Image (cartoon, rainbow, N blue to C red):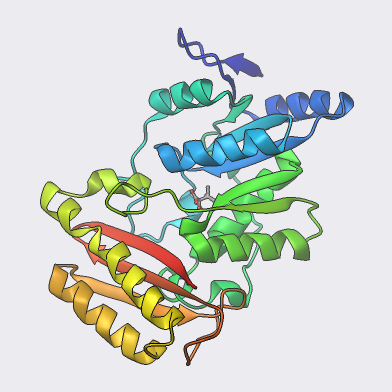
Amino acid sequence: MSIGSGIPGLGVEVARVPEAVRRRVDAWAREGLTVALVPTMGALHEGHRTLIRAARSGADRVVVSIFVNPRQFAPNEDLATYPRTEIEDLAALTDEGADLAWVPAPDVVYPPGFETTVRAGSLGEPLEGLHRPGFFDGVATVVAKLFALVRPHRAYFGEKDYQQLLVVARMAVDLDLGVQVVPVPTVREADGLAMSSRNVLLSAADRAVAPVLHRTLSRMAARLADGASEPAAEIAWGREKLLAAGFSAVDYLEVRDPRTLAPVARAGVAARILAAVRLGPVRLIDNLPVG
Ligand code: PAF
């Protein structure tokens, strides 16, 4: 079944069953068209729109998936409260000129009897992997399914989820999926806060504190880049700064190798600073390159 959204003014074609996606991408393949995929969990914001624009400039046709993937949420996490804004999302896709929205229900993606899990390797173990066990297996599994169904030439992922980007790029190579994973720089609010669907859950008071995360990472990155300080000292400084600003916890604040995510012990080498912090009910992540 391939249906329009059925909502006046929303022109993007919406597929809710795999056959509808297959039929559309088969037709594009027969025409020799290239296809880009932008995987999302909906609640679309300017960061997603940027991914879609990049996808449009990199391929003839753009598929955007909207699926809040239950397999990447632990039982204590925010699956139930994750923002869901399907009508606004379809309007945004229409606006951005996406060609197909893949909007499956959970039991379409994981029907009864579903058994298979793609296990993320060592790139998925540290950082988010330590704090969210099973998260990257959930991501790798759903992204593998998306790649298998849509068979895109390219897939676009934001650098905000830097570790996810590395895990997915590795998986695409390891499983010979033939998909080029394209990183897209983080889109930020004017005050530096990285755009995220979860930002709407911040109270006004927490929203005022949130940009301190980016400011702290920027200061650390600048000092590491000019060799003024070593990673351990910067991490200690950054933790203190974040806690003093009002973040209730720092899950991690690390300086890591940008390709392997191994710890970096000295300044003056390629590195990425990655952080996850808690603010009220919201967990924020962000990262910046050094230099
Ligand atoms: O980054 C996200 O929104 C999700 O992790 C993704 C890649 C859509 C998989 O569910």
